[in-house]
Amino acid sequence: MRKLVGHLAILAAAFLLPLTGCAEKWTKPGATDADFKAADSTCMAAALARHPPDLSQNEVMPAVVSQSTLVGDAQAGTCQFTGGGEVAPAVTITADANQDARLADWRACLRASGWQPAKE
Image (cartoon, rainbow, N blue to C red; front, side, top):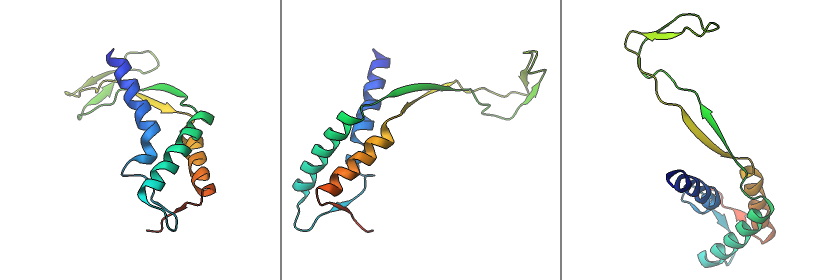
């Protein structure tokens, strides 16, 4: 169950990325915030339909988090840390192979609807 909740959080983040405070700002002459929210929702739904999440997980190897010395022979599998070093646990990273295509599609849809990225 805990793993499922984590996956749902990742999916939500992938879907809502363009809607967050870090998102790009878009403008359209005469349009309101409500107009943008409607266009944003429509374009994201279309982009998600064309480029659904394609999640893969990769485990990142542990890293030494404090000073230590590695002794032994890596090829023989006899490596060990000395000097009090601690090894951080391995971390699993989830990536969405379709995220870039989905974001590009979302941007193209907004442009086709007359929206332009705001100039900072």
